Length: 100
Image (cartoon, rainbow, N blue to C red; front, top):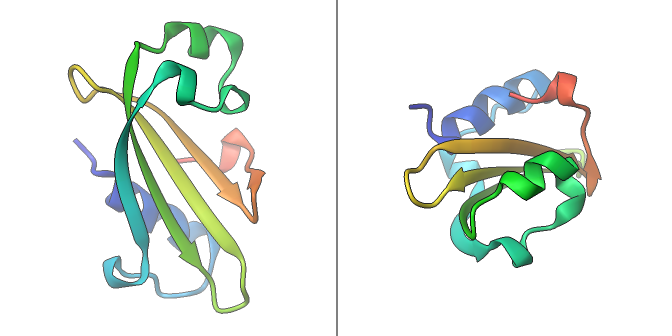
């Protein structure tokens, strides 16, 4: 299993020339009910398939030129199965082709 922070650090290496380390990032993991999850990050089918409770890990980094990156990993709370990764840059959703 690849941890969220590993996925984030690899993704940031593709997105910026900053040397991002674990000490440079902010992160948290929270448990959310499906109703608390932002629907705009999912297709209709993905959202319908979410279980009642999800684990969400959010990891952020502010680059030297003030670009704000956020990666959100959604997991099935019952078995820790990775459901989806969402990348945002300055609050805008990044295209799937740039996701890890």
